[in-house]
Length: 254
Image: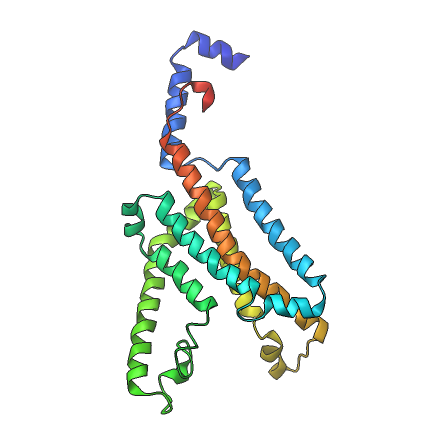
């Protein structure tokens, strides 16, 4: 009530507040709406439920779904491609061109899912022995080295340009930024869980067959969650951009 009385005494206060709020929204200084966080949380819950659901399936069906080239790996690749298409469709091409490394990274993730870092090479693009072994032809070494330098360059450019913005968005309360962080976390977790029993064996740590299989399910479904979280972030950012560019019609609509 006191606020209404103040606005009646100072009729310019409400429009001024509205303008300030709109300016903050255009600059991206306001936290995301609860619905954005709800959407992000719903995707995370869906991933967790999918892990549980797969665990409850017959073992033979699990192996079929999670196998290399199986349903979930194919879905992961398709989701990366959908994310690239969403970037191109929902944002101005000029903006996408300025941040070319984002769609390139998504395509690199898709290529990794298809094992294109291994299949075309004698020992593997990311293996040190690919560049030192006499079993690898010199021409293949040169091509692999050029590709590896290009990939590392893309990663460096991404880190330099986006790390600060991502941290700032997290501090602001951006659900899209959190979705990106969750996607990155899933990627790190999947890489950690990949062959975990083999990695722990030299330290005298043996994992039970049941636990090792659970880790395998988490790894494979987690890899599906990576592009899903990135796609969620893209959709949230596009929605925020549309809302930011649409001016409010009345002060009470802000």
